[in-house]
Length: 267
Length: 64
Image (cartoon, rainbow over all chains, first blue to last red; front, side):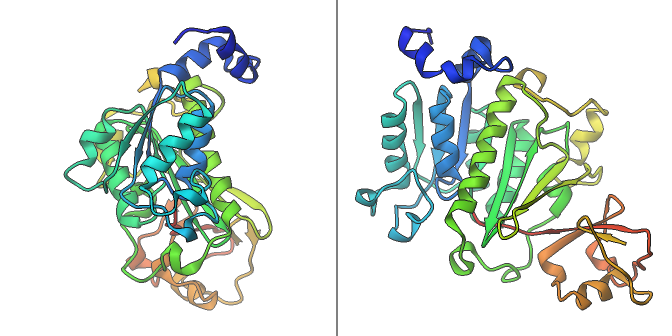
């Protein structure tokens, strides 16, 4: 993509950053990000990624927009109720930034399709609302060597970590397996402060942008958690588990390279 | 002892399992890191806590 005068103006706040600059902005143009779940987390994440000029954004969601989604899923609007979420989100992205190519997948991810979808992308945002899907995404991204951002929210709480397969702890290293059925009620039953989803999804988008521009330190080997009631943020160090069913062999095989800034070239 | 970054006093010698149950934290909703290592869920009751322990309790948070 060329730097036309319009693009120079649109992306000037990025270009002004030493850490991004014109070269970093070009990396964003060339980047492909998959957003799985266009809900509370996927909405803000996809919007910020689109605004940033990410070249290709894949959107995976089988659902249609429900009125109760609009309290937090800000990529959808009132006239979209009843429309497929991927269509509604694609329209919002097109209106925000026509530079972005959107690939909609109106489907659920499952064991049979997920690996072939994630392998076409450089970074994945987990915006799903079930533990089964979160572990599925983790295992597929680890197997395909695709970096991803885990995210979860509920009530006033959020948590996120970034995984660089073979180089950092994965979600399964920390949590092992989904909790027993019924141990943790689903979001739809326990409620969520809408802005909490916005906070977490926005952190996930920032991690993706840092990943592509090789900026700062990613949330690798670190679970960031917050509780919006007292706005306490904590970074909990976590370790790769050499016996992890998803990544144990990979992390062992890769030796112990420094997991730090990351970056697509470093995979 | 430190729990999620805050001081917590152990009133009596106790296992991790007893501590969680005193705090009314359901073991199936969390994982616990003790001094940087994840504690296997089936050994909560046999893991005795000591005053110098650093515990991190991470909750399963699954909404999206």
